[in-house]
Length: 302
Image 1 (spheres, rainbow, N blue to C red):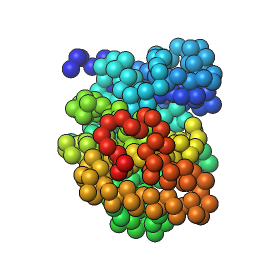
Image 2 (cartoon, one colour; image 1 turned 30 degrees about the horizontal axis):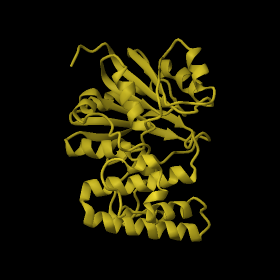
Image 3 (cartoon, one colour; image 1 turned 180 degrees about the vertical axis):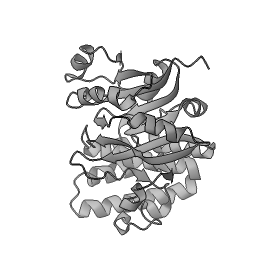
């Protein structure tokens, strides 16, 4: 590893992010406090005014890229950054609170911690439930409303956000990652074109002895769905969840996970969720899946 040039390498991947990216970049200096830092933005082929906004700024390095996916964009941004002690992953639709990065860094400096996540709020100021439990057959979906840990992957109890503690993983809109952890894991897995890359990274980090820790001392706002969710992105989310589960458990258990996912999407479709029928068709008919999801290992039964 080369000598550290800055404390924090902030990295952002944009795609048609003109509505949000300026607010994020404007919030970075106060969020960093006295820390030295760099900002690299990789644009994954935006067709709106994102690049014009970025090119007019002097506070970030802009890397133009084809859209090879979010994970690939993140790895490209890290590669273009100077050597740093930690990598700050940011979604373009986030806004950081003053002093939040030093607070994240303090939590990251505890022994065995590789990833830290802040307390996130929605645009209206309400708590955004960003903490997650690991995937299991019981947590495939459909029973999260029970809020029982055995069935709910998403942690919604406000009490869980009141104090610092270790979690299985956290939504990747704002994460601070120890540089050694990022390097040891080989960065983000680029076979996850979009969705599940942060889940995979945190679970692989845990396997390697690096904990993910939540701290309420650091705060930020995340619009959520800044790029919107379409039937296509919902489909990608479900298929990548199955891919991740298969990789971690093997084909036999993944076949059950797949069947439960199909059943849950059918249930949702019958309740009127318009994104679920296209997802069911894509799960059952591989030819209807987005081309980028055919890469890598077998995802679900064909």
